[in-house]
Length: 235
Image (tube, rainbow, N blue to C red):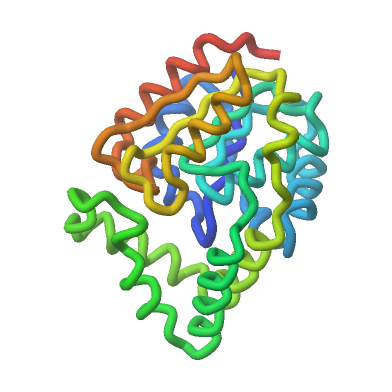
């Protein structure tokens, strides 16, 4: 049995893992972290995560949660017995991405959050699932619940993150890298880059899947996670 910390993405909460929690909890101890809502930078979030959860853990992070997982590993590699990065990246934001995030933050401050969220649904979901009313409503609901202030704070944390690529070759723990083949926010090349830098990693690309793979293809994600976890010796 492993102790698993699930790390949601930007403005996401436990809803992002609604299909993974019961599947993983049947075999492992599962906790969903909320440090991204309580601290302003990734290093602060990671430090709090390590203090609040003593011992060693499997870190499973989606998108921004994957960046947080890498930061926690950087701070305390001996405390991380395995890493799973879902739809994430080791790269820092480009100047263009920082410009786009900054523009979005300005709109959030002006009360135009819904306008931005709806305009970006095509970047979040595969076209096949973008038309799923229940799925998009669930996504919009938990982001609205986070609110504009959190969207701004967390975007700023992401914009300020370090370049993790020079550190990747130091990862010695088991590593699973998973990505939707149609992910427009963190394209497959970002996951392929991580996997190529860590020879013992496992790379899984999900067909007809966008950025939020835990919601778009929950059964496939669950199967891959459980199979991977089954090959890791518990500490």
